[in-house]
Structure formats: structure tokens, C-alpha cells
Image (tube, rainbow, N blue to C red; front, side, top):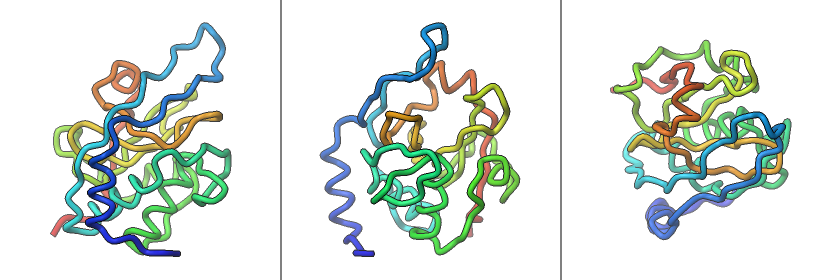
Length: 172
């Protein structure tokens, strides 16, 4: 894999004004996800922030069920597994329930870049995962027909579905 200069990625990310929004494929009576949020500036001074920066490098990558690479697309846990492997050298499980058992629980007010955030989006706990970026934003691979994008944690849709967060990379 070609490595990118962190300064180039930071400059590139500062040019991004908003993530890509997509049409939901949910039935009409289902609540739809809010529009994508803008990406925060991530300071890659540690492994956890490196994970967040690695995730931002994949904004716009198409969603694909079972996907685990930028060439073929990502599902939510595939994105997490890929960026943790690339950004921190860690091999993580490929499903959200197993991911929700790793590391240590984190209170929402104590979230740091690189923490995993979990949601109930399929009428079951821990059915969706994203990576916290800072400034109340997270990145994820949303759903069929969507693309990797940034969301605001404070949006009502995400607040109502929030299941908690886990810190995989301990702070020193």
C-alpha cells in the first residue's frame, strides 16, 4: 500500500467541506439518517489519532456489505478493521458485536479520536460502528448505496441510537 505524507492528508482534509450524503434504502416509514457533517481537523500525534486520520483518507469510498478494502468498498466493521490494521497495526474482529467487547468502555464526554462508537441501527444493540474523530464527529460506512462519510454525534438520529463507546488503544 502506498503511504501518504500526514501533512498532505491534513491539508487535503482541510479542503473537504462536507462528506457525501446518500439516499436511504430504508422503507419510507423508517427514520432516515441525517446529512453528513464536515470533517474535523485531526492531530495525528499518537496511534489512536493515526487511526482517525487513516479513516479520513477513505472518505467517499463506496459501501459494500462484507467489504474490507478501499478498492472493493467497506461495510462499517470492515472500515474499522482496515484502518486499525493500517493505522495501528492491530487485527480486530469483523463484526460489531465482537468489536463492542474489546478495550475499555468510554463515557461520551471522554471520547478521544480513534475510539469506537456503537449504534443500534437494525433494531439490535451494537449493530453499527464508527470511529470517533473529535469535535463530536465520527466516520463510518453507513449503508447500502452510501459512502464512507462523517456524521455529527449530536444529530438526533445518532443520539437516539447511541449504544456506547470503547477505547481500543490505551492512552499513555
